[in-house]
Amino acid sequence: MRLPRQSSIRDRAIFALTKDTGRAKAGRFLILSTLENEELGGLRTGFITTKRCGKAHDRVLLRRRFRSLVQAHAPKFFSMNRYLITIARGNAAKASFAELENDWIQQARRLGLFSPPRSSP
Picture 1 (tube, rainbow, N blue to C red):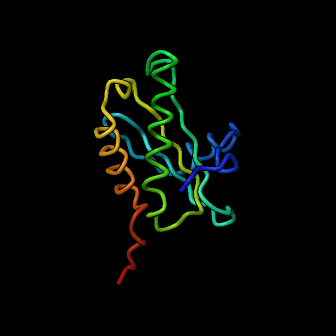
Picture 2 (picture 1 turned 135 degrees about the horizontal axis):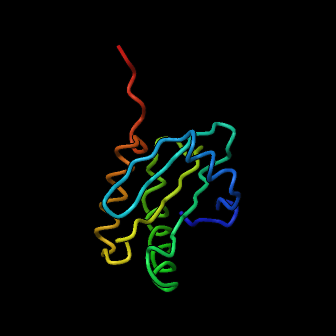
């Protein structure tokens, strides 16, 4: 899955809405936040890498790695109609790609993105 430009979140209001009303899970290297929206035509993604993560080349590398994680694992999501924001923590630039991938997958599982919601008996 390639991430087209239309799938990027560029509006501050959507970032704020996802932060305020969505669900988030924090890991060692990143925070994964999501908000389901049935009116959305697919997955919309955003990445936040602040100066706390390192110099410009470190932040660009992190965004590339996060984009690669979304491309590889998002097609396995149960529901694609959602906003998904990946926020890098301060020590993320020092992490290897494998460490970032493990942390990202773990937070996605904790958010229930990979499996259908369980029906209550």
